[in-house]
Image (cartoon, rainbow over all chains, first blue to last red; front, side):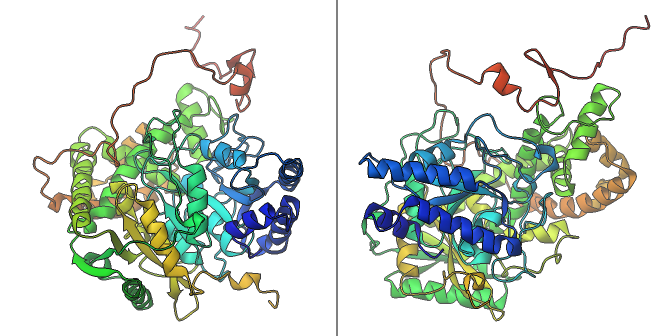
Length: 488
Length: 101
């Protein structure tokens, strides 16, 4: 399906189509294409059509419907849904169905959105390629030899391949933006705390944030306006910060703005084609009226090290709950309580999850805590200060999303550290809690999509989205993947 | 720095992590952790004297609420994913020995 969220809402509102017809088209696209990319962990055709019929009934009866009435959405499978399993792409939760629903899913459903299925991810959202899923591997929507990107790879591929117009992902160190970049779609990580994480399976609690993956910026604004807002069930949720979208109502012109460019984001390891497209993208921002300003982010080079200490420390603590007692996998070969825990965990977790639990436990352990964990919390403050200083001079900061386009399947699976370095430009926004967006800005010599990252001040998603909207107008950087071409 | 990650340390951390790693996993883990720790050691270069820790990334502070009774999951809902349950309880294997009786 090639309609945007905006197109669907408008057409249903005018009575030009029905929710059932839209959802049926989404399900048909999934049936036709998902076997090639494997974005979905589960698809709920029957439930989705029943929900669509309910939207149509309400419309026919003249009852109020929400701002996403009849819009098919896909949900990353680490976000809890009633009636559908929530596996986190892990053996540990292979048979798990949540007894409660995530705040964002409640909000989507009450806005009239139709959940068509759950999407694949790196196990427990730990990975940059989707190759760490314990279920199966999702591949890139533009080439089956390339990785989908991670960890929200299933969600990005589902949107890029025209199976749904929007999907939710989660972003701890780049997990929305990286797969969005690799598949040529828009991915927004909101400001930390703006969107409730109630019902998001916890990975790195001081970093995790849920956000939309869509084809264009206006759709991202529409979805964000539904999912952002207060939720007393998430204690890190920042109160009194709803998102009201200007662009959805036709407000498309950002005020004159300045773009910061830091040389630290254009150094060694950046592929030539990515550099060229991102620089051209910054030039295009200039044509839209932006003033370009050189800035410094002197602690950027420490972001990955800082991130992998904090994220793994938090993961080691969050994943302690998987002990075979209350839910999740339980071993059948335990003779005592220690074995019940440790056999259940070693059987249930995959290699990358074990590696991160080990690293996180190490950096928190007696004798190493100050050298690693405490040090990382202090470096985190310095990274945040760099941004505070930069944002005194500029409105947004532009950089690549990733140093390369989607790499080849299997290319980095034997080298965890090389895989971590794919997140070199994305983790600092999580460490500082900033909103950041990945916008398609071109293609490399193999036709693989390239992403431009814009980071904004805390709670200034409206500015990022307005700029992104203007940036994409008149380009076809965000066109659907060749999978959608019926000639293939 | 990577020589710091010796076999004894890997075993110790695996124990703390409650992960019964196989011998081959221990070997791989030592190699991989050594590479990663060698990389994250670059934080040592940064002067952090007197720099405070980051607590909340967007600067939120405590939010207080009244301590009141609210709805929560019913026992039967909370038990729907239990590996084993009995009546309204999670059932686990016997973990205390019988004191030799």
